[in-house]
Every structure is written in C-alpha cells, then in structure tokens.
Amino acid sequence: MSTAHTPDRPEDGRDDDPQDRAPEHGHAPGHDQDDRAGYKTDADAGSVDERDEADAPAVDPAAENAEGGEPAARVELPEEQQGEQEIPTFDLTLQIRRYNPEVSDEVHWDEFKLTMYGTDRVLDALHKVKWEIDGSLSFRRSCAHGVCGSDAMRINGQNRLACKVLLKDLDLSKPVTVEPIKGLPCEKDLIVDMEPFFQSYREIMPFLVAGGNEPTMERYQSQEDRARFDDTTKCILCAACTSSCPVFWTDGQYFGPAAIVNAHRFIFDSRDDAGDLRLEILNDKEGVWRCRTTFNCTEACPRGIQVTKAIAEVKNAILSRSM
Amino acid sequence: MSTPLKASISVPRSKDLEVNGVKYNRSSSRRNNFEMYAWLFMRLSGVVLLVLVFVHLWVNLVSPEGGVEAVDFAFVAGKWASPFWQVFDMLLLWLAMLHGTNGLRVIIDDYAERDRTRFWLKVFLFTTSAFVILLGTLVIFTFEPCPAGADPALLASFCAAG
Ligand code: HEM
Ligand code: SF4
Ligand code: FES
Image (cartoon, rainbow over the protein chains, first blue to last red):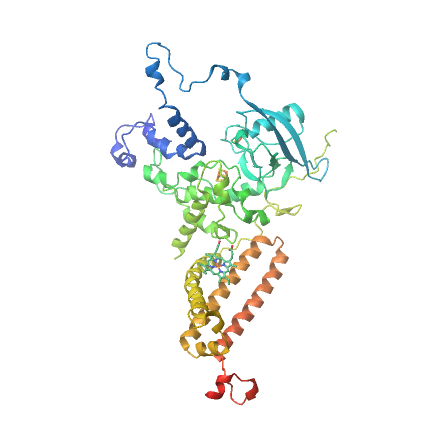
C-alpha cells in the first residue's frame, strides 16, 4: 500500500515523489497509513481502546512485579476464571428462517435451544446447529472474521455479519432471530442470490481507469489525496447496506448503497480518469437520486463506512458537474 | 431425502431481465437530468415553502384581530384585492402543489412494485394536481367578491356598502 517502502525503488528521483511533500512524511513507517486506513474507526476498535484505558491505570503491574522477573499479565484474571471450562455459558433460543425450494415452496421457522459460551458469536451458534443438530442448515461463511463479507444476514431484524455479532451483546431473554438479507432472491435458508447486487457493482466500473503516460513505477498519490476516499475503500461487498435499503426492497432496480460506495472509491481517487463516466452512470433514474436518506445503510455497514455521507458526496459531485 | 438429480431452481444469467418475477437487470436506463432537477427542486422549494407556509399561517390565523375566528369571506376578499397577496398565494399554491406532487410521485416509485400500478397511480396523481393548480390559479386571479348583476340575496353583506 505504502509506496515509500517499495524495496526495489531507486533512490534517485525521490525528490519528485509527491508523497515526500506530504506533511506527515517522516513518521514511523506505516504509521500514518494505518491511521488513514481507518482501523481505528472500526466499530470494535473503540471498545478495545476503552478497555485498555480502563484497566491500565488501576495498578501498574510492571512496577509490582519488578522483582519477580516474570512479565505481568495485562489483565489480572481471578484464578478460577482461567481454563476453558470456566468461560461463562448461557442458554439461548435461536430462531432461523428456513427455505428449501427442493422440498417445499413454503418458508418456515426452526427453533433451536442452545447452550453457548460468552465468547461465542451468532456464527458459532449457526455452526453448532449445522454441525451438531441439523446438517441441512445452509448459510455462507468463509473467513469467520469479518473480512470476506460472506455472512451478512438479518439478526434480530438488523443486517449484521454473523461472525461479528457476539451473542452476549444480544437480548437473550427473547429468541434470537436469523433471516436472510432482504430484497435479494432467497435460494436456500440464509443464502440469497447476490447476482442483482453484483450486477449493479459491475455497472459502476469498479476498477481503475487511468489514462495519460504510463508511469514506470507506481502511480503516485499524496496522502491527502488518498485520504479523500479512504472510507469507501473499506467495503467488503457484504450487501448488508443495499439489502437494508427500503428503496432497494421495492423492486431491486435501485443501484443501491454498495454500488455507490464503490463508485465513490474511484470517483474521488486522484489517479482515476473515469469519474465523469461513473457520475453519468449514477445520474440514472435508478441512481443516487432514489436515495431517501434513511441512513439504514450507514447503520448496517459492518465496516463502519459512512455510507449515506458517501452517497451525498456523489450527489454533490453530479450537481456541481452539471451546474 | 435424496437430492433430486436436477435442481428445481433455475440459475439466472447476468443477461436475464427477469427470472421468476425477480428483476435481475435494470429494465430501463434513463439518463437525463430530470431526477437531478426533481431532487434539487424538492430542497429549494422546501426552503421557500418554509417561509411562505409560516407567513401564511401567521397572517391568516394569528395576526388578525380575533385570531382564527376572524377568517371569513370578507377577510379573503380583502386579501385578494391586493396584488401582493395574489402573487404570494399563487406562489404558495404552485410550490406546495408541485412539491407535494413530486413527493407523492417519489413515494409511488418507492412503494408500488408493479410498473402498471405505478403508471396508473401517477396518471391519477398528475391529473388531480393539474386540476387543483389550474383551478386555484384561476380563482386567485378572477376572484370577484361582488359580481355585477348577481342576485343581491346571494352577495356578501359588505357588497351593498360599496
Ligand atoms: C414547510 C416547508 C417544507 C420543507 C422544508 C420541505 C422539505 C422537503 C424535502 C427536503 C423533501 C425531500 C425529502 C427526500 O428527498 O428525502 C420533501 C419531501 C416531501 N414533501 Fe416537503 N417540505 C415542506 C413542505 C411541504 C408541503 C407543504 C407539502 C405538501 C403539499 C410537502 C410534501 C412533501 C412530500 C409528499 C414529500 C415526499 C416525502 C418523501 O420523499 O419522503 N412538503 N420535503
Ligand atoms: S458499504 Fe459496508 S455494508 Fe455495504 S457492502 Fe460495503 S461493507 Fe457491506
Ligand atoms: S465470514 Fe467472512 S465476513 Fe463473516
């Protein structure tokens, strides 16, 4: 990502490197880039930071154990809480919307009573059902760590990645409901046909279109220019946003937030030359103007992308280009 | 049960327009600036309406002596004797009607799923809106509180004085 670390880059000519003129240049390698990449804005990051702050000042473990010679654990766990058996468990009722067109056209709900651990996520509960109770349950997952975007589903009525929702964060006094995402044709159980979603994605040309002279090295970009579209680079194409949008639910003709987010990622990329073309594509009857600013997409995005803001920026770009 | 040899779900191709009632591709792509201007109009007319609507409410309901009770035929006749209020009310009528009509058009697009339903709802919407706009404009500019030669029994009391 960071051009500054390209090993085979000749040292001469570096004066022309636009990155060298960036004010941040000279910091610890990779540091700025990491901040920019927005991992701090990720929903989880906040709580991790808070926990660090809350735990650290209580005692200084390093000082206390200075003579002991052993590195102190950052979090002191009571003796009996260590070991796998001691992770707190709880019971929950999981309701899953089932659909199998090979058996019946009818949709029904299955209910499972499970005992899960405090560290488990909804995905673990689905695994438990599939691996131990009902092997016919179908859902997509790949990375299981919020990276691949396979397992967006409606959990308690909200679009979430099953692998990022901890069971302990849900209201377990009521059954936890899991449904496929809305607005896309359901193929089986929690699996929907993503084709209409990716069709819109393909239409906005999600690839770099750069003209001009072919550079011999990478195409330079200042850190400011990179930061301009940083938020929208984080998309993992999970479809949580598009399938949370009431306008998309109607007839699936709206381009949808994800396509606009990924167009935004190139429209505001200083290296790209096809921004006008993408704005033209999104100036469609089914393009950005169908957005009703409901913020469902922003609320749904597991990557914390300001989706509605990105849509508004594309609207403004179309307006200022036409006026 | 055994898996059927042939899956009963058809696999849609990226070129199929519609499979089992699901639209896989955009049925039409209309790229002119109409939706952009409609979007812009909602915001601009909204700002102007904010002023017009509250002035309208204030002038008609709050400021007259006697408040709401004071609004009667004579009050309206008095206002429309002034070109200022004629233009003001026409602006309010046109902006509110066009703003409201476009808002309903958008709601129809958002909630009606079938193209035919959309079409007929919009035909109904545009006809009624056009009727109200034209009739309203006609009334504002041809309003005559005391038409000459009318049956005096039907006229407002203040006509006799004038
Ligand atoms: C008082 C000042 C007003 C302001 C500032 C205002 C503003 C707006 C704006 C910005 C929208 C667009 C919403 C969107 O695109 O998501 C809108 C929609 C709408 N407006 Fe107004 N408006 C006003 C008065 C009115 C009046 C008097 C009417 C009725 C005649 C009306 C009827 C509608 C309708 C039906 C919609 C569509 C609803 C929707 O898109 O969700 N508005 N308004
Ligand atoms: S913008 Fe967010 S919710 Fe939408 S597809 Fe990308 S990662 Fe998923
Ligand atoms: S399984 Fe990869 S994002 Fe959840």
